[in-house]
Every structure is written in structure tokens, then in C-alpha cells.
Image (cartoon, rainbow, N blue to C red):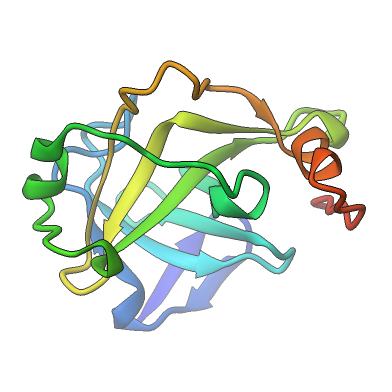
Length: 153
């Protein structure tokens, strides 16, 4: 299928990339249809709205810079997207990239959960007060001893 995307313009996308978010994303509750795409800049992904092409979210796997992360969400959130086993869920964090890219942050308080089998997702709220909306990705990578900093052009 051909879709209009924010980062890459018109692209061919595989139907298997399509995801349904019955509750939308916080602040975008009316947008329910998305595709998950690899970004050209690793280790990032794009969650592209199919409803409004101008809306797309940059995602990252939080375990890359916080191996100790655990989403700790309400079990009802998992039930709503039919998660039965840990291996069925993909967990992402939404990334915010300011003008100074070295200050990019990830929202670990509001993880994106995706049922990889059912192709359904939702944004949840972590019940662990340790996780905040702005974790500095590059600082946390540096704390792990990883100097392979990434930027997005």
C-alpha cells in the first residue's frame, strides 16, 4: 500500500506494518490507525499515523539505554490489547528531539505497548514513579559506557 509519511513523503508500506490503537496516543486519541516503520537512523523507529500524514512519532526501544527498564503498567492495559505472554509485547518509548539533538529525551513514563501478534497497541502510564517523561538518552547511554551516540538529520 502507498502511504504519505511525515519523514519520507510517499512510500510503499507493507500491510503487516499496520497497527490499530483503539485508544489512540495521549493527546491524539482520535487517531487510531498507524504503521510502524524503521527509521533511516538506527536505533529509531517511526510510528506514522495513517489518519493524518503530518502526525508521526519517533520511537526507541527503551532497553537500549535503560536495560533495567520495566514498563509496570496496569494489567487492564495489557488485557485491552490482548497481551497474554511477555513475548507477545513490543515496548517502545516516544522520543523528543529538540534543536540541540544531544538533549533528546525518551518518555519512559508513557510507554507504547504493541501486541506483535494482534497488531494492536496502546500508550500506557507506568505505575513506577522512577520513570519520567524526559530521560536524556545520550546521557543514559554514556552512563552505560556506550559512546556510539546517534543523531537524527
